[in-house]
Amino acid sequence: MPWRPRALAGALVAATALAALGCGGDSNPTGPSNGPAGTFKGTFVGGVGESASGVLTITLPGSGSIRLAGAAHASAVSVVEAASAPVVVTGTLALTGGNTVPLTGTYDPNASPQLVLAGGGYGLTGNYSAANGVFSGSTTFPDGQTGFWTVSANAATVRVFCGTYTSSQGEGGGTWNVVLDENNNLTGAATAAGLLQGTFTPGSKAVSVTYTGGTASGTLDPATGAGSGTYDAPGVGDQPDAGDWTANTGGC
Image (cartoon, rainbow, N blue to C red; front, side):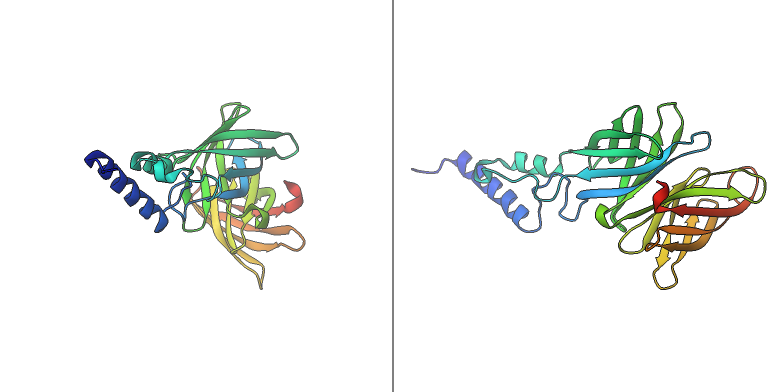
């Protein structure tokens, strides 16, 4: 049967698209093959005026979750759209001392924000950082208050330490939650400080934390699930602050 020009053109385009997928492309609509996939675990913390906090888990489709069935008959347009389309994301908010709230939403690597989740009156938006495999962003609570959240890749290996901080300068206190991943990267969130970022040294169990307007240090012990230290916040709020923090894996 002789080739028609249109059929030949279509076949060439489809073959080019399929070849691109075979040379580093990905049939998973989360985007590039090194894009986020699997289950992430971390924490969410209310800002000033919001006491709710807990453990946040989100799950994105795995890299093999969508297969290019019938690829030989697919047009290049459908192949490209499948590779860049938003994907459905699910999650849970396990409230400290409360219920578990289911979440649903989407992840679109080309959008801003990339991740949007909602459920039970809670709303989360945020973006992905490939540098350390972390999603983070802001939270809206059912009472209208706002807060912060962060989750790290490979949930089964992530440890979440939940606790509090107390000012030694008469500035009160709040929630102090930190997240330790398998590569000893430290993230987290605190009521007045917002998102936390730092490192953990396994030998000494020392932690070093930075956040907007301040720093913190101390120790975490993954074996016992306990941690404590001090913080210094000369640039947070109307008054410089300093004090102590404590957190443990049983406090979430």
